[in-house]
Image 1 (tube, rainbow, N blue to C red):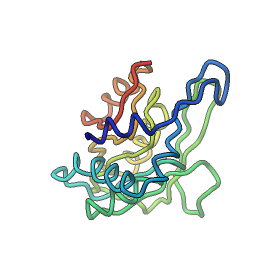
Image 2 (cartoon, rainbow, N blue to C red):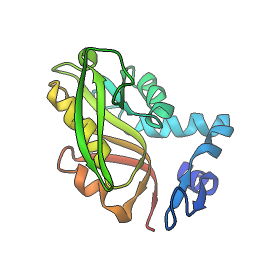
Image 3 (tube, rainbow, N blue to C red):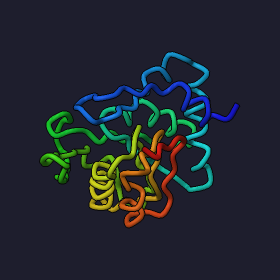
Length: 178
């Protein structure tokens, strides 16, 4: 059975979480099945085998679940991009707008350097604001953003169109139309 079909069967939808009207996509059941973890990581990495990726950037915190596995399969380094105040200095930061306010992401300054070819990974693509901010952080350090990687894309929120302004290659395994 294709990995996308299996994932859609396993990912749990939780209505009205964290607020009324939101249909939350719970990926935690994926991590109860070792074979599904392996197959998901392999499918996420396979798309990037010929892209010359030198680093995978994982976004705090669910980008840390598959990000290091993708990096290992690509023989690339792994970079954590975290919420402000979670990494030791010297960090570089970028602030960005959310639907309900503002947030700041940080990375260790020397984690990405000119010449690095990176992909940015997170569990879910919604509006694309957080991934776009991570890309801005990488670009400010001189890295090239090769593309974006997600387990899930909520296509109805338009995040892929937003991210296509930064990099053309946007890859995900499962999408939801609503």
